[in-house]
Amino acid sequence: MELLSQKVAIVTGGSRGIGRAIVETFAREGAKVLFTATSVLSSEMIESLNSIGAHYHFVRADASSFSAANEVVNACVEKFGRIDVLVNNAGITRDNLLMRMTEAEWDAVIGVNLKSVFNLTKAVQPVMLKQRAGSIINLSSIVGLGGNVGQANYAASKAGIIGFTKSVAKEIGSRNIRCNAIAPGLIDTDMTQKLTEELRDTLTKSIALRRMGVPEDVAKVALFLASDLSQYITGQVIGCDGGM
Ligand code: NDP
Image (tube, protein in one colour):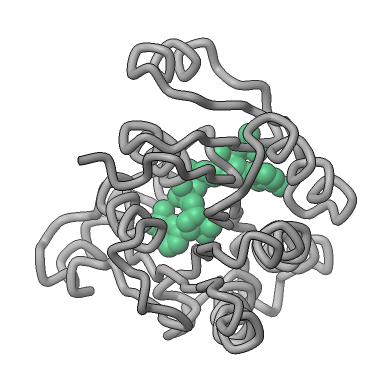
């Protein structure tokens, strides 16, 4: 049984890491997926999507841009006719101790990680209200719950996402639109490749399951939240951290 047949999803930052795993998982489960990134799409990913018979559309767009969000939503409605699921996944890090953190590092992270969630959620809202159905999934982080040295900007953006998620869940739950967050722990992607091997090893020792997560671990949680299996779940933050 395909869990997402007849459903249309938008995934921001879908070209690598967790976003890519979500795009591929959703496509395998029968969804039509529009996804974004700021770089050109690799021919390797195009081939991979074609090989699984995915129905997809790629739009090059900066998730931190308010006007681009409307263009993404319009492109999705034009191409696929509706929007059932929005995954706000695009994210970056600009780590630094607060003492050294520049205004540009703060603004970049808040813009891409937090303002993007406002941009896209606001843009899909009229479409989902008209449909009287929808599932919005925001990528927060364990760091948004507990903070982390050198990541005041990132932690603030991810904690902000949690407040946003819970508020939106309350605002539009009566219209059958759900809004939840996922809080991944340490997942093996380009983002965490930046950490030293020593730090990755130390962090892995603090994980109950004694391994880093893989993007597919998070994609499975997104699949659950996107599908009707989670139809009575909203305003939640679901951890996906191996017991970190
Ligand atoms: P990656 O760095 O591997 O991938 C990020 C994706 O976002 C890429 O497709 C990138 O493409 C895209 N992206 C970056 N900036 C923008 C932008 N301005 N507009 C649109 N797309 C953009 O990250 P991960 O897969 O590791 O992380 C995905 C999400 O999960 C993030 O929100 C992250 O904070 C969160 N997360 C990750 C954890 C981890 O351990 N990896 C842990 C907890 C949370 P391009 O560069 O071409 O724009």
